[in-house]
Length: 160
Image (cartoon, rainbow, N blue to C red; front, top):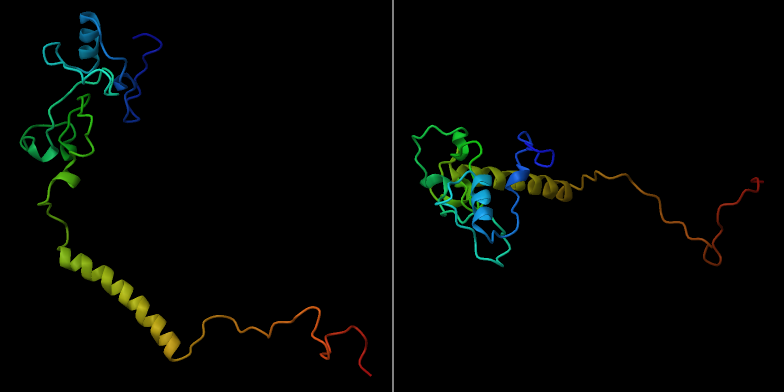
């Protein structure tokens, strides 16, 4: 591996997968296919000028559509290590694409929990206002400077 092509496997982003320029020759197409772990027959880039460079046009298959019994390296995402993903991978993730998600708690319970929390804060505020339980510090009347005419203000002269 040359000095320029460093692979940072621990960060989750492989620099080699960053799209390069659109392949114009057969040798560039074969190099791009190797770059994305595809055989040259399966490699087809997006149209020139689309902005995706040499990134391969892959079929749009969501995580929930993949075989649940396959032995994936990362089962939760149903993905293998080093596998090239679709350009819109985030759209095809299971949390966004499956309307039949089974949650840990029932949806009415979750909605009721958050509504009850807001209701409790509203109730405490209402009781505080109704019973006049002021939780803030008392304040003295505002002092104006210069004082209005005819009003004696605080002075430093000793009292007689």
